[in-house]
Image (cartoon, rainbow, N blue to C red; front, side, top):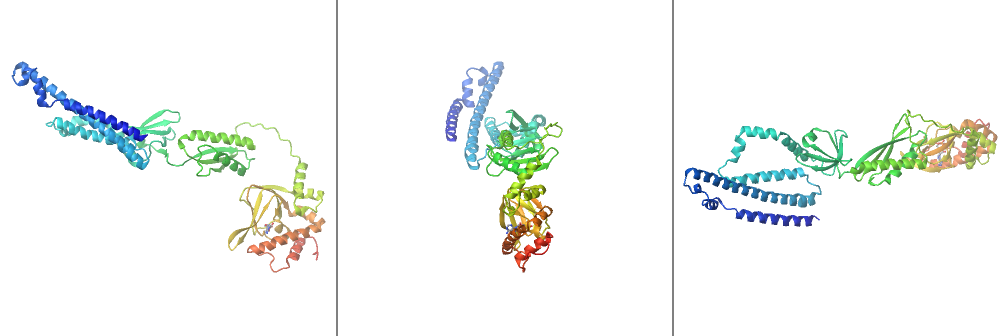
Length: 500
Ligand code: CMP
């Protein structure tokens, strides 16, 4: 593509250069011109008189005209060459080497300087007796007039050069001037100013002098620029689910970069609900308006699918039908059924299960949140209703996972039954719902089911063995383990003398 353009330009240059050279060769020099003119005007050959005076004037006019035509033709020639070289140097050589578009400001400045120098040389060759430099420097009035007339223009030019020297921005970057007053993609950088195509497809031209004084925000086109998008949900929607969902949905939006994972986080626990912030990196930042809109739209649909609600401003009158009261019996039966699935509780009757279920507390934990911590006091145990946990101990100063437990498993029974501090730290590995059973609610059940103590002590014992193998354990070492656990459970629950 570039080669074809270069060939065309070379062809055009050669044709124009040929024509200009021919015309220049055809224009006669001063002496030849005088010879041609002489026969037509009496005075031209120095015969004097009124007619001679007019003749000399006309002769000098014609000679001057020829000089001016030559200057114009030479300048046309120079401009042609400058433009051609400009194209070759900036578009072909430099563009290939740096892969960046050289701004038109630099190109214009270079062209102007070469043209001015060429003009001086050409002018001097045509009028060797005229002191051009003296003309420019000696005339104070001319200097003032030109200075005043060019004040703004030169201001823009120098501000433009300063901005370019900084390399603050280039064509294709997204620029934001005067805090969102002008936002758009830079289309051209010239000696006068910067042309921005706004997102309403208007062109805004801002002079370099104004730009030089402004705070400008630039999103370079080579950069992976990020966007922030905000939304909020009701407090009843768990953050883990929301964050996971939004992250999945956003990753699939077109123009969202796959190089970085979108970041979704809780920004604030606001008056109306949970405020979230989404940070995404865009492949093409100049399309951020469309991408933002698409992300919001996708979030809305995802929320619809998953039953997540946006928070309403508190000023909105939100009339909600009163929900049917939760059937407590039904809830208790449901929890009772869940407990019945736990192997430990299988000897219990339906009635006993219900008694425990009545006092159970349902608790929700976020991923990576500790549920119990090693060394702390504890008087309850937990059954995993939904989710999973890891049991972690310290081994030679480092955290070590010794067991993973999931739905239907239980933990926290050791401290509950023995009254000793927690033997391990248990952490939720995902959003996890647990049923918490307290010492108080278990006591009457154990009193009525002594065999349960036996079962608990067996499980606790096997867990203890594993603990002492894999951790800096300080539990019950040196005692007859099984009898120790059994007795301490009976003692802690006030169940009378040992069952040895
Ligand atoms: P507790 O000591 O009250 O608190 C930490 C809990 O981690 C502990 O009760 C057990 O329920 C659990 N735990 C400790 N060791 C193991 C293990 N080896 N396997 C499964 N769970 C364990």
